[in-house]
Length: 287
Image (cartoon, rainbow, N blue to C red; front, side):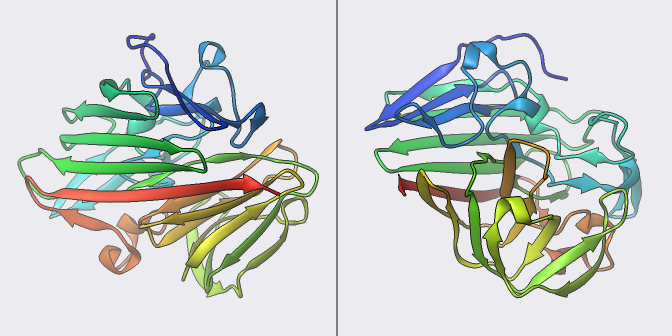
């Protein structure tokens, strides 16, 4: 679980953009503002209590749900631990619930690191680097995962940004398929999805999507944003009763490790010593 604050909060600025980081809370973004306007769900870093309430956190070594906290890999059975209330599955990996270290920081860039030795939450050792680059009109995030275990391990990467919901928040995303889910959130079948184009308040998604093409366009009465990534899947979450919504670039279908062909659903087998990289970019302009 997350430990008490052991490294200072970081504050990055470029033009009108301000990025506040809490390395000790899962390597998370406490807030992103354009002038005083929140872009992501934003909290002053000293007031942020957990990474789960942050503006964005990294997903590693898997995205979304790992079904019933167990999996089979290379002929061996493994278990994980509860980490998300009473959810029957493990959720979002382990990186978001660990304290990260600051490798370097400057006025508009920072790099964090996490060393995971392998434990009851995830059995394999790995190292992560996360880099933040802020420019006057964009935020870039980079992840590098290195397998330091004694064997290949299954890996997925991603980010979980929470966007600030406004009256006319709207999504336009070109994609081809949606994974329907059971009551516990595990995907059950893939169906055609002719893109997403509508006001967030009228959408009811909590799904993983395939066939993402081009930039995800995120707009409201204040801001116009373009989200791009090296990662091919998106998880879109639009809760009707919350002041936020999520558009999450991820590398694999949720619970891919339990599917018949995990690799065909994006899960990677990362060899000993191998590195897996990912990036996402959020471009930000006035409406």
